[in-house]
Length: 306
Image: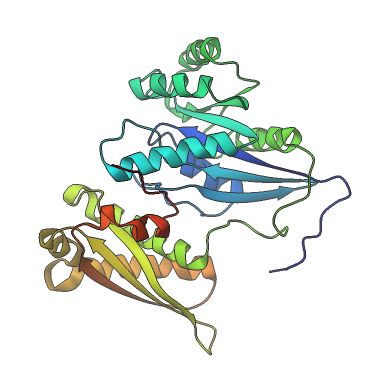
C-alpha cells in the first residue's frame, strides 16, 4: 500500500453517513459500494456497533462512506453508546443517506428516525433499499410519504444485495461531496485496522452460527496480531461472554462450536488478507464487560454515563 497520497489537481473528498433503522441494509450497501467486505452482515439486528468507514476512490472523488449502527430505542448502556455513535456519524458527515427497508415501510423506528433527521442540518438523500421485494407502486407511495416529511435532494431506489441502483447512488455522491484533498491513498478501502477487521469477522461468524442461543452481550477482542517470518498472520482472540452458560454455548460439545466458528473466520480472513492465517480463539467469562470503559474503547465507542 502506498504511503504518499497522489490525487488529481481538483480533488473532491467527503463523508457520507449511512443512517437507518436496524437491518435496513446499511452494511450490505457499504460492502457493495466499496466492492469488498468491510462491514459484517448478519440476520441479527444491531450487529454493527460502531462507525465503520469504507473508502471509494473514483476519478477525482474520494468518498468515505460511514456505516453507522442502526438507530433504535436503547435499553442498555451498550445500546445507548451505539445510538450515540450513529447520530455522531450523521452530525459529522457532509451528506446523510437515509437507508429505508421498503419491506418495513413507515415502521415505528423509521418514524422515530425522521424526527431526529429533521434536526440534522446537512444535505440528505433518501435510499430505498430491497426494491426487488415489493411492487413498484408501493415504492412510489413510500417515496412520496418520506419526501413529504424530509427535504431530500434525491431519492435512489436500490437493491444493495443485488447491486441494482448502487452505481447511480455512488456517482451522485462523488459529484456532490465538497472540493478538498483526499484523506487516504487511492488503494485504501477502510480505516479499520487489521486487528479490528479480524475481530469483526470472528464476531460475525459467532452470531451467524449461534443464532438466538446467546444474547448480544458477547464481544470479540484481538489480543495479539503478529506477522510471521513466512508472511502468514498469527492472530489470538478472546471471545468475552457474561455467563458460564454462555461460555458453554460458544464452546459447544467437545469444543466443536468454537472450532467451527474459528474455521469459518480463518477462511474468510485468508481471503481478506490474502495470506495464510493462524487463528486461535479463547472464550472467557467477564460478567461486567458491558460496563468496562476499556471494552468500549476497543469497539470505538464512548461509554455513556449511567
